[in-house]
Length: 122
Image 1 (cartoon, rainbow, N blue to C red):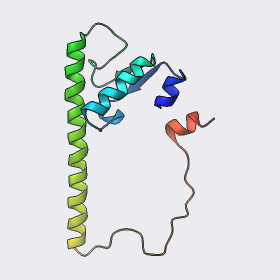
Image 2 (image 1 turned 90 degrees about the vertical axis):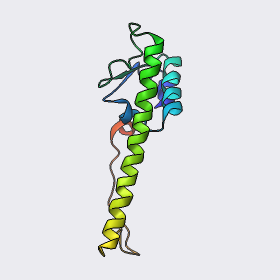
Image 3 (image 1 turned 90 degrees about the horizontal axis):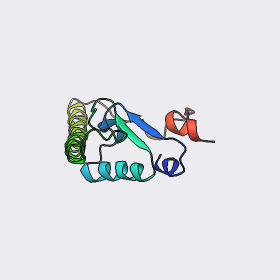
Image 4 (image 1 turned 60 degrees about the horizontal axis):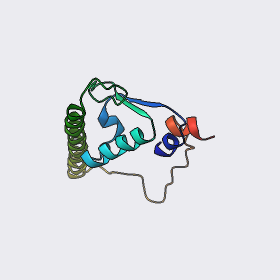
């Protein structure tokens, strides 16, 4: 996506919320959005109206604070999802359930390209 942004294949990215864009924490989220700004691509978070690089209504300080807080929250949510998944797998193992695919059995189901990669594969 950043490569296509640099090549000006689009002008704006709209996400439902920042955590759908990145759950990599404060520094990475901030760096991605700053790179988009540098490439002239706007970034709008639908659920967090203060995270909108296309408007100059909100001061940079407020924007930075909101971005930092929301990035931190997204990273924490990712960690919690991972913890819950691991706990569920451990519980299933303790209950004697078999996890995963049987050994030697391959999943040869053809996969479709979807989303961003399908739209830009040309």
